View 1 (cartoon, rainbow, N blue to C red):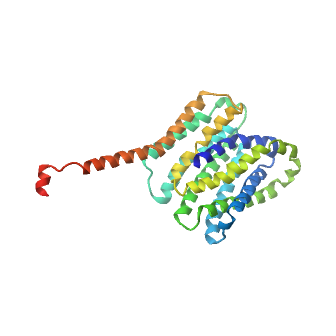
View 2 (view 1 turned 90 degrees about the vertical axis):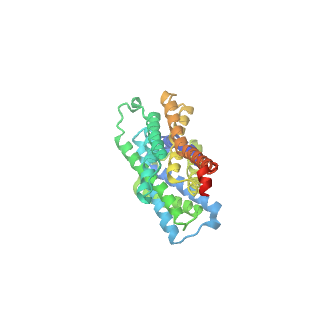
View 3 (view 1 turned 30 degrees about the horizontal axis):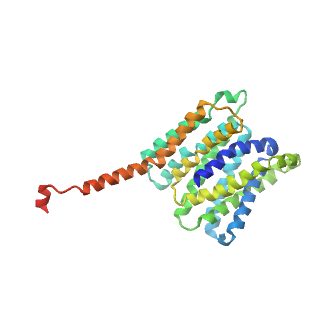
Length: 313
């Protein structure tokens, strides 16, 4: 489910960029309002019998919704002032922050596999997405800064989801719905206050021409993705979650090449392999290490006793 989420989010870098250019350049938060508003209605229609409103929901769902609102707003506005590859790298850089936020909060130091995996992932994302020739004369400092800030907020949201489950006061369906619903309400308020003057400039013919991009980012990149993330985080630790979702950057590059938006390059191959290696380091290597250690311990326990041990027995 996390891999499918990374797939939709990776495609979303390209699809959102196309939607901003074609329709929502002056109203980026309206695009987000449609994403989260329709997704909330979809989740409500499917899970209406399981959704309740109480103090725990208001707290955990509300804080998560505020984080989603802030993170996506900064990412989408930042995408106007930077290039998609930079947006992909700086957004996916939340893999650097989650282990250390978790360390600070739980006082539990991550294993060395995690540190190596994060380092390899960061190098892979840099190689995959950083291309100085792409910048030209464009100043991307503002866009890159907003995207770095959004990555920190996304790391906090992943941590907050894990923290909410550890409190055992809210189930995954309620947490997903209320986070998405709170984000939708905040985005709507922001759009009405700051973007309403630009509503008249929306080209509804262009909306019709780009309907399929809109459906993918709404139902795949929002409704499914946040239910999948919340469901999976009941099982998968936050650090591993962030690294799997960090594959969105590699996937975004593949989609970009498939749609002929950018040419094939060595950065794609090397960077993608490094991101995959990072996931293997964090997901597979610790499991193999534990199995090897367990087998060694069992082998030691099955060793016949020596003569001295027999005498002692």
